[in-house]
Amino acid sequence: MSKPPTRIQQRNRAAILSAGLDVFSQFGFRGATLDLIAETAGLSKPNLLYYFPSKDSIHSALLERLLDTWLDPLKALDGTGDPVKEIMGYAQRKLAMSRDFPRESRLWANEILQGAPRIESILKNDLKVLVDEKAKIIKTWADEGKIADIDPHHLIFSIWAFTQHYADFDVQVRAVLGDKAPYDGATIFLDTLYAKLLRP
Amino acid sequence: MSKPPTRIQQRNRAAILSAGLDVFSQFGFRGATLDLIAETAGLSKPNLLYYFPSKDSIHSALLERLLDTWLDPLKALDGTGDPVKEIMGYAQRKLAMSRDFPRESRLWANEILQGAPRIESILKNDLKVLVDEKAKIIKTWADEGKIADIDPHHLIFSIWAFTQHYADFDVQVRAVLGDKAPYDGATIFLDTLYAKLLRP
DNA sequence: CGTTGTTTTGACCACTTGGTCAAATGCAAG
DNA sequence: CTTGCATTTGACCAAGTGGTCAAAACAACG
Image (cartoon, rainbow over all chains, first blue to last red; front, side):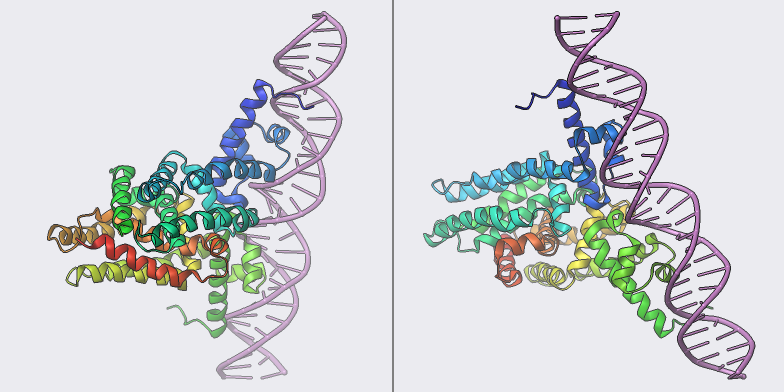
C-alpha cells in the first residue's frame, strides 16, 4: 500500500508539472532542460529528481494528464442531440480550451510537430477510433439532410486548426491584432463560419 | 569584391540549408544540434562551421529565405480582382504551399510556438502592415456587399490555421485518416467552406 | 528531548553541445 | 611540379546536459 502524499509532495509535484508545462510547451522535449524546469519550479535540480525520476517521466505525466482533457470536448459530441448545436458547441468548447489552456495546446502542438514519437500509438488508436466514431455520426446527419454534405474528417480538422491556432500561434495573432483582444472576434467568427457551412 | 561561389560552395551551402531545415523544423532551435545537422548534410561539424559561422547563422539564413516565400501568396491578393476569386485563390495557394513545403511551414510554426524571439519585430512590422493592408481591401469588399460581412483579420487567421494544419499536424492528420490522402479532401473542403462563408 | 522518516542540497560524473584551431588534403593555374 | 588557395578534418575546449549519491537539514511524533 502506497502512502498518501504529504502536503509538501502535493505542492512540489504540482509546481514541477506546471513548470514542466511552461518549459516543454515552449521549447519542445529536446529543447527543454531540467535546470530550467527546476528553476521555474523554484527547486534545485536534485530535489526535482527526487519527485520525478527523469525528464521523460515529467513529460509523460504531462501528456497523460493532458489526454483526457484534450479529447473530452469531442467525446461530449452527442449523436442524439441537435446536429448544428452539437457541432457548434464542440467548436466553441475547443476555442474556450485554447483560451483557458494555451500551454496545454502548445504542448500538444510541439509533440505533433516533432513527429509525435511518444504518442504515435495513441494517435493511431484512441484518437483515430474516437474521430472515426464521431465522423460517422456527422456523416449520418449529412445523409439525413440535417446538415450540409461535407467531409466529416476535414470538418473536424478545420475545427481543430482554427481553434488551436489562437493558442499555438498566440504571438503571431497578437502581433497582427495589436491591442485588440483575440478571443471575442474569434468567437463571433467561429459562429458565423460554421453556421454558414453547416446549413444544408 | 567578394568572389563568386564555387560549385563546391554552392553544393555544400545548399546541403546545409536543407539539412538545417529538416532538423530545425523538427526539433525547434534549441532542440536542434549542429552534430545532427552536419550528419544530415553529410559533412563533418568543423566543415559545416566552415560554411556557416554558427548555429544561429544557419537558422537566420533559413528564416530569411523563408520570409519572402511565406508572405508572397498574401501579397498577391489583388484589390482590383474579383473578391471571391481572390480570397479563394489565396486560400488554395496557401494550401498548396503546405503540401509542397511542409518543412518550411513547420519551421515557421516552431518559431512562433517558441515565442518568436528571433522574428518578433518582423511580425509586428512587415507582417502586421501587410495583413492590415489586405484586411482593409477585404473590408471594403464586405462594405460594398461583394462578400459577406465578416471580420477580415479572423478570416485570414482561419485560412492560415486551416491550410497550415495539414503541414504542421501532418502526423496527426495521417494517423486519423489512415491510408486516405489528405490534400484531395482538404482542397474540396476548403472550397466549400469559403464559398459558403463568403457568399453575402 | 531523541528517534525516525522525509525533504533538500552540494559535489560530482559521464556525455553532449557549440565552437576553435592547426594541420592536412584537394585542386587549379602558372 | 609547385605555388597558392579552397576545403576538410582530428583533436581539443569550456559550458551545459541528464542524472547520482551521500550527507545534511527538516519535520513529526512519542
